[in-house]
Amino acid sequence: MDVQLSDHEDTIHWKLVANGTFSVESMYLDLIDSGPLSRSLHIWKIKVPLRIKIFMWFVRKGVILTKDNLLKRSLIGNSRCCFCDHNETIKHLFLECPLAKLLWRSIHIVFNVHPLMSINTLFET
Image 1: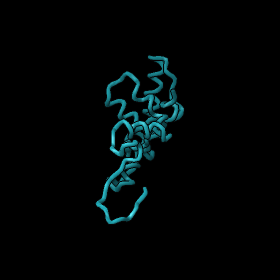
Image 2: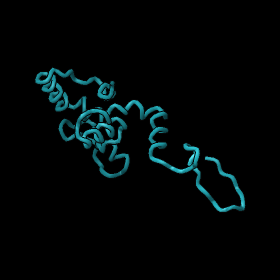
Image 3: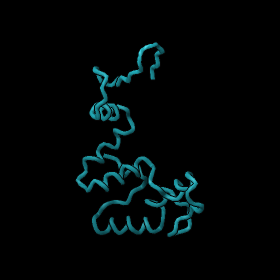
Image 4: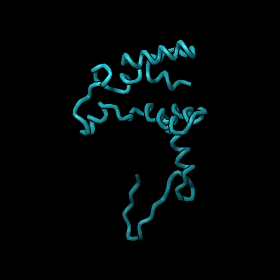
């Protein structure tokens, strides 16, 4: 951020557009070009309800409120998975927990969708 001291009144200038006025479009385009978010852009094109897209984006960002994330924020005291007594992380909850493995196996049998090997596999295009 450029800060220049002067006797003039303070002003805000949005550097992403020539006229200096903020727009959602300029912010969106800057986010797309910034890198990590661009790998998640295909999530928004999937034909599922918006709440599922948002949930998938939260999973991708690693901010789902699993017990380990809650513990980092001092909101709970126990980080154990209620299904198998291992530490609950996003990876554990979606891939490693015996219940998750059973669900993925069922999905594989019914829909012929191969089980995930990593969370990143979920977001490959």
